[in-house]
Picture (cartoon, rainbow, N blue to C red):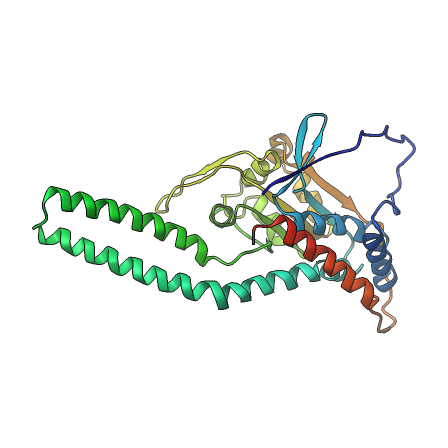
Length: 316
């Protein structure tokens, strides 16, 4: 069920506030930010946006914030850049490790508990469908029997469509997906996040790697407004998505951001202004060989916080 919360009145922006606001997070996020800075030697402007992106991912599609009679989803697009060698991928992995763990558990549970029964029911439905088709071929059914069997075939095909969806494991995120695969994922799950610590492939896709070099960000643009999408592909079933909902959490080098923001179609299409782009001031640092780790109690609290959000805002 979608949950809606009212936002407090918006305070006036401070025109002198130009630096990254380091101390605005709840306690556990503040602790994770500080620990990432201590362990990886980065500035707070690198882990901070990634923490927000992880929260957005954990919330998924089912939180709406109301501000001046306008509803805004918790799903958002984050793109954090930093120089090579700053530890950006390590920070990303540390912050997103709980989501990786949760997703792996969901997939394993689906494989062990859901998938066997779905496959068994599919086999039963397909056997009944084949039997009814053979009865049609025989041609010795009266009009009433034919109508009864035709109606049953409709029920079976509808059920098989449902089973197709149930065969797909629940996912919080994918690291990469093409514009051809995303509609299928969204049709099955209702929501997905693009989450990548090395986003070169994602940026290439957006710039048209599979679209003859033409910008290919239509679904993301629709997700920014939670608009419907109808996808027609030659040789494939049509897909209609009543509401496209996606999040995005990308980390890369500044040149990737330069390539993305230099694309004229993306500029005029409206996607780029909806991306929360940050460029960290973190610098490459010498690795002194220290074996450092984030404090265990902080790691545990961060994971439990994300687990609670996933449990509360996803229909699993």
